[in-house]
Image (cartoon, rainbow, N blue to C red; front, side, top):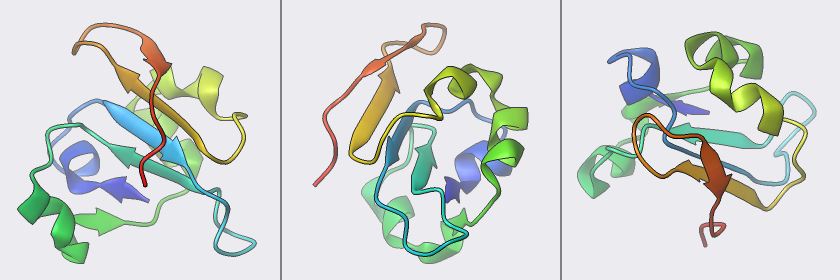
Length: 90
């Protein structure tokens, strides 16, 4: 699942986490720009399901982290920095 801030607005991934998969076609990854407001995230119309490869094409910096297990989370320290481990939401 990815935020429209990435796929529509063209922002880079700023925060990503992996949940246990909901089904066989779900990678468990959830991608956000990090700029989403609570109102934005509360609206399911602002998110779509994509193949992880599609999101990697938008932001190749995520590729080294895609094999991380469920309950992993990563964020950028700034717009130009690399990802670091983050607290898993929830």
